[in-house]
Structures are given as structure tokens and as C-alpha cells.
Amino acid sequence: MRPLNLIALLVFLGATVWVFTLSEPIVRKVQQGFYTLIAPILKAGSSTEQFARAMTQEVTHSEDLAVLLERAEKERDLYKLTASRVRALEEEVADLRSALNFTQQAQFDLVPARVIRRNPLTWSSTVTIDSGKNKRITDDLPVVGGNGGLVGRVYNSVESLANVLLITDEASKVSAQVRGSPEKGIVTGQLTTYGQKPILRLLYLSNNAALTPGMTVSTDGRGKLFPPNIPIGKILSYSSGPEYGEAVIDPVVDFNQLTTIFAIPGSAD
Amino acid sequence: MFRFILSLMGTLLAACLVQLFIPVLSVFWDTRVLLIAIVFLVSALALPTPGMLLMAFVSGLLWDMQRTILFPPYDGVVYPAATSSLPFGISIIFFGVLGFIVQGVQPLFRSGSWRVSLLAIATCLFLYQIIEIMTLSFVRGRFLLTEGVLIRISLTALITCLLTPLLFWLTSRLAEACNYQLLTQQNRRPARYH
Image (cartoon, rainbow over all chains, first blue to last red; front, side, top):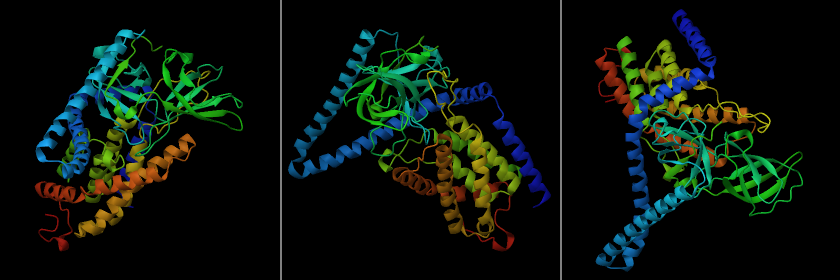
């Protein structure tokens, strides 16, 4: 090895070791600086993603319409297209009404935010939202969906945007209870791939827990990370292991259709 | 050479910004375009070892600033197991290792044989994701490399490496503008990359 290459390798290794020894607050500050810098670009980028999503939906929709086109005349198809757009708008209005109704009925103080980026990280389930510290959305705040179900937890919040770690991520942990049963455990996510519906796992249950499919799982407020009684999902199945039992949960929130979420300020410990 | 490294660094920063505009390709098994990784790999082919290591450091740092999720410690009484994730800075090592691998075909790249270089880059993109998921499996104690994940990794490598010819062209242009000798003298043939 040439002396210059050896020196470069040693400097590289030294710099890497230095990065590894950085404390968490410093890493957090570095990340916040990075996100503050890219926030305006990220917001602009979100419109590109939304356009791409709309395009994808349109392509799928066009395929459906192509089948109908063979059976109907051109003029009739134009009306069908218009009708489908009206339906989409109706659904959007229904979603917004539901979200508005939820905000009015909720027992918490809620701050709404729009999802501007989905799953930007390769192996983590996260979303980026268009509000941050400017709207009282700070790190560790719990986040719920339009139907009141638990969505996740805020991290890396900067002035005008924040990220949310979804409860479907493997790194997410939520203390939970099964309603109508004394069972308590920890809900964690699972890595899913294309076409799979996100599911959750409820760990550390009793080995002989009397749990049946359909039972509701909600937060229990232990650890003070999440307020109690936020719905998480319904039990799909339960299996006992050598030490603990484990249940598979179907989340109440449709994570593929997240558009508006609500942070609960003042709830983080 | 200094100017060439600076121009590649600029390209890397631009790639980091463009990456923000690229959505997940949900119609192709949720694949992604790993722009930072591919810009680094093409740079590693074009640069000598010290330059490659500098690029690996910057690329890894940029990648980890987006990837790392830090939370304050969970309540140990309520949450029995700590959340395990890849530490901040691990990508620097991954990029460094891949940089050395891809430099193995640098003589071929410098002689103008772009096909082997493209194959090496595609392999490294695949390897990069495999190393990442295997390390994640190791720290979490659960095997995460399923069939679906493997398909996603393969498609991501395939789709990302489609950008390689464009980046080869861009690199050769930058080298030309910076008076950096990308091809070895005896193999300098016009219109090889452009």
C-alpha cells in the first residue's frame, strides 16, 4: 500500500471513530441543523411526490377505464371520468369532515398537520409532516390519525417540519393494554414489503392469556410516552411462547392512506 | 485533482438534495433510487483512494443524518428491551468498504471498459443494502431478509444502476473541465463515455 493511501486510511478510520463517539445531543443538533437547512426544499419536494402519487393513481384508474372503453361510447366515458373525479372529491370531503369532527370531539388539544413525505428511509416506517415547532409540534409528541387511532411519535422536529416514527416500525414501542382483559404488553411494528398490509405485534403477554380475535388494544399510559386509551388496533391472533405470549394486531389506522395527522401537544413527558 | 474532487463533492450534495424529490416507487415493490450511493460509487471509480475515502466519509455522514432516528431512553420498567437500530456513522464504514470493492475494477474503468464498471456498481448497490439489512437483523436479533425484501433490494439496485451511464458521462465531463486525467493515456479514445 502506498504511504499516502495508508495515511488517508488512518485519517478516515480516525474520523469515523470520532463520529461514532459523538454524543446523542450532538447528533441530534447536527440532524436538526440538517433538517432546518433542507426544510424549504423538502416542502417543495413533497409536491413532486404528491404529483407522482396522483399520476400512479391515474394510471391505475386509466387501466380500469380502458376495460369500460371497449364497452361504451366515447361520450359516455367522458361522463364516467367526470363522475369518478366527483367521487374522489366526495371521499376527500368526507375525510376532512371526519377529521374536523374528530378534532371537535377529541378530549385532547390537537394540532393538525399534513403528511408531505412517506417512507423516505429504506428500512424504517416514517413520514414527514408540514408543521414543526412553529405549530407546537416538538419531539416525542404522540400522533393520532383522523379516526383517533395511534399513528406514532414525533422525532427530529424543526421550525417548519417534523418527522413521525410510525407504530408500524420495528423500532417503535408502545405500552398497551387489551380492553376487557388484564393483559398488558408492548406493541411493536414489523418490517413489511410491497403488497403487505402493515401489522403490529403485542409482545410480553401472559403465556395463558385468554385473548380472542377482535379484542381491542389501546395505549395504557404507562411510561408516560402516550396518553392512555388511544386505540391501536384489534387482535387478529394470539400465540403462546416458551416465556411470553404474543398477539398479532390489525391497526385501526390505514397507514397507506395517511394524509392528515394530529399531534397531541403537552402530552410528552 | 483537487478541483475534480470538489466538483464531485458538489455533485454529491446536489444528489442529496435531488434525493428529497424522488418518491418511493410504490408500483415497483416500494423500490427507491439510491442517488447518494450511486454518486459515491461512480466517484469511487474515478478517484484515487484518498479521494474515495473522503467521499465515503461525506456520503456516509449525509446518509446517516437522514437515516438515524434518536429517541431519549425509554422507561426501563415499562419497556423491557431497548430499541436497537444502526448507530450514527455506520454508513461511513459501509461506503468505505464498498468504495474499496468498486476500486477493484478501477483499472478497467480507466481503460474505458464501462460495462464491467456498471456491473460492479450494480453489485455494490445490491451488497450495500444486503449489508445494511443483515446488520440490522444482527442488532435486532431477528432475521429480516425475507423474499419480499430481497426482491425490493434487487429492484432498487437495478433501477438505481440505470443512472450509471448518465453519471459516467457527467464524471467524464467534470474530469475534462477540471483537467483531470480520468482515462489512462494509452486508452484515451474520444467518444467512449460521451
